[in-house]
Amino acid sequence: MLKEKQRNFILNNLKNGLFNGFSVILLMVKVIVPCYIIIELVKHFGVIRVIGDFFKPFMKYFGLPGEAAISIIAGYTINLYAAIAVLSPLNLSTKDVTIVALILGISHSLSVETPVTQKTGVSSWMLFCLRILLSLLAGAGLNLIWTLF
Amino acid sequence: MDIILAALKNSAILTGQLLLIILPLTISYEFLKHRQQTLEEKKWKIFGISSNGLVPLVTGVIIGLTYGAGVIIHSIRSSNMDKREAFLIMLFLSICHAIIEDTLIFVVIGANGIILVVTRFFLAFIFTYFAYRWLFFKKSR
Image 1 (cartoon, each protein chain N blue to C red):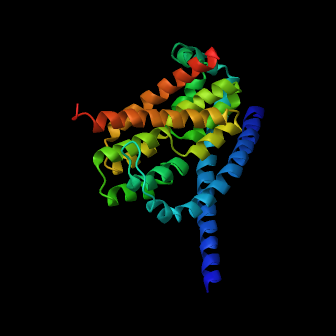
Image 2: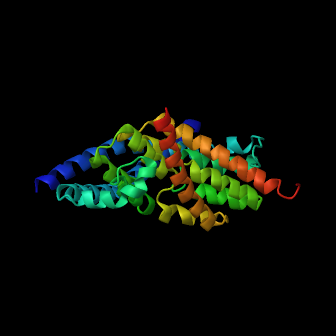
Image 3: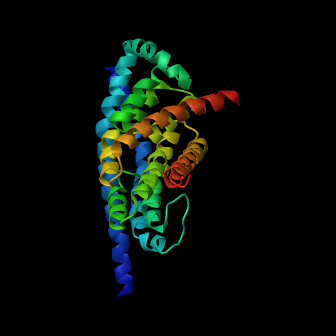
């Protein structure tokens, strides 16, 4: 009896976990493939230089190349998978990827996560602004520390 | 045409790598969700966050805001906690959440995972501590 219950418990968890995992993967494929293709095309036709040069003055505070701005914007507005799809073809160094990851780790998929914070009853505007501000500060700070040591 | 094919192949590889990380995680999250009761019994208080806040806090740090949303919203609302305490929890969580998944998917493309985890925890503790000092000791001074 007890064993039966335990087995059902484990099987149920496995089933739900697999189901959740595959729905994440579906979402990932929908985002990653188009983003990857777009960024490769942009790279091929040299448009990336224009975008990179445009963002260069802002990104120099984070020690990042201008192209990384595309990834950060994708992460803020869409989700982390989009950011990774953009970041992967750029072939950045470990330092650059870590800084982008820290910035995006603190604030990402704001369109999904801001409503969650709102539902808990906490002022979501304040958290929204705090997250963006903090992520940029953390990125700049990590860049500073990394270049010092 | 070659570029598109290469992009398709590379994005498939990237998706495959992420799949290997995500599937075990989503399965273990299901098992973790049933461990809530053990957390609720612990008596613990730090930075103005009491044992009531431990469930949403741990859920958020491990599972993240998107998948843990149900648990977080429910446990914060049902325990009638102080607004300030809820704010502190959400502040901590907004800096430091989904610590396993977020870190691993960036490690796949070459980030340094240890630096990421340590910095996020450090920042979360610092900011929660100062927010706690500011919110709870404002009147006594």
